[in-house]
Image 1 (cartoon, helix red, strand yellow):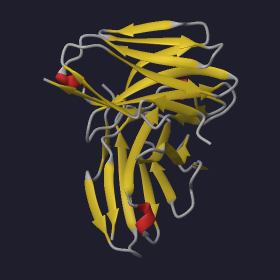
Image 2 (cartoon, rainbow over the protein chains, first blue to last red):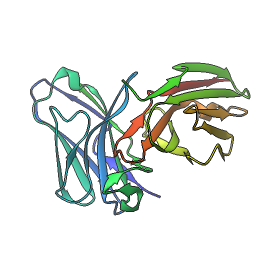
Image 3 (cartoon, each protein chain N blue to C red):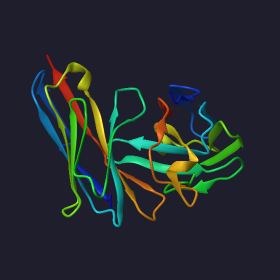
Length: 119
Length: 112
């Protein structure tokens, strides 16, 4: 079974704080993703990575950065948290063979999510 | 504008009853369509996947249908159980687009 874990289930931070969200997968997947999920909007892609030290912007990268120093770990960083970043954050991974030109097209395996509240 | 629209936004059904969820999409050219189930406090889990040439796929009491001509899909839940209470998300892949397009989801509540 694929296992994707996220460092925290619930997190409360203050405006302006630097926030780190960690994601680890144990299936040697090449691709990893960060999404945020808001009511009525569905999942929106923030960043993804198709290899170690590689990263690509998704639909809503503003205010976020990512780091992938090891294959199994993909970190999402909020440099200066703001209240509009209060959301559910979901990490996902997928194997390389499910991609087209290195980009995801198929099944992604999701972590349990981190509910972040910025006060 | 979201390329995947789901309806209804939420519904409540009695245990043992059937229900049908709808998904309309505009993603083109189309590659495949998935239905995910997301339990409260958990990440989404894939239920079914259908490609352009498939028009129905079952997974236990879940049956998904696809009409690629009208760009519509439905997810039918038969003989609902309390454990079916969840959000159901329709996800569409384009052929040449890296982005997965997610619907906002339908929240299903099954009551005893």
